[in-house]
Image 1 (cartoon, rainbow, N blue to C red):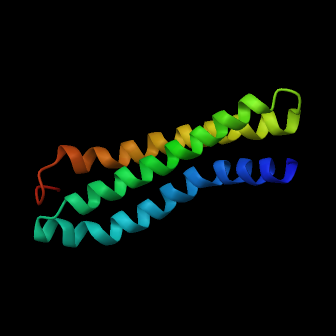
Image 2 (cartoon, rainbow, N blue to C red):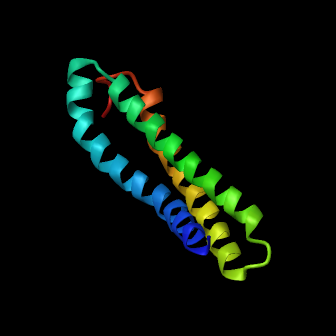
Length: 108
């Protein structure tokens, strides 16, 4: 039982930053063709998928936070995982704003 909790806590702590890191590379490689061909939907779907993964990691952290009242280490990891997931979600949303606001091909 404790081993499963540790795995979930590590997964929820690492998922958000990892997904944001992968999103940066994927968006960088998709952006020029997406704007040349007028296919911005691929870029928007990448951001949406990354946001869903970070929100799922936050949900795992909240669930583990509820069950970690007596274990200080588990509570600390769940709190940190929730903070990392929230920060990663904010970063994913911030990186999606130009895609949503700018007209394709009108970037400087």
